[in-house]
Image 1 (cartoon, one colour):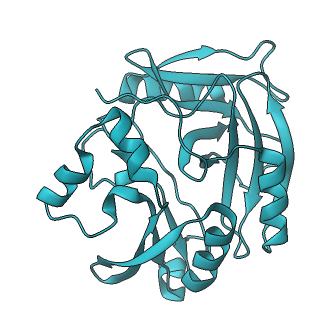
Image 2: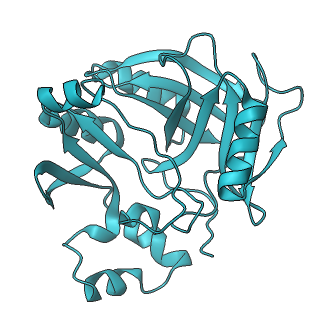
Length: 253
């Protein structure tokens, strides 16, 4: 099982789910993925518990109660992007036209976080690591694989996330959909530290240039797609872990 300790700033690093019944949801995911849960934040967090899930003893995700200021309606999964300073990054989100849904707050000693939305309304979180440094296991059955952004304004998304996190975008073959591979320059150097030879393996199976720096994907969502699926015009959809290997972004290798 590939393990890691932390993520560079600008890389999606953590997922959690807001639930009206956290203990019931934890029981569901325990049965589905074999996760084990523990409350690591003394006294929980405002509004209820924050249950950290582990797979073979390594952090993979968390289940929490629904915050009163949540932008989502009902249960939802959230993606968090690693940052060095949650307050400074939230300010940059605002400067670049995004919205701060929940100002920076401390999750005990686990992390400092903020909840934001891009100019089109897609919600994402910021994670300044504390005792939780991000998912320790990825890209195996029962763990997080990757996150993608569905949007009707890909050009605006590329500008926003490029300015805030330094991401670059390359057009990718996504079949019938217009898509882009999101890269963080230099990320492959980080991956090589704990997974030597990853660049060469990607090249050997014919991955496109820059794949080893990939941290996510953008899919262009047309109006009729949103109507048919019930999706919002722009969204980071559920980054639900998979029980089976799926196509992986290099950011999750």
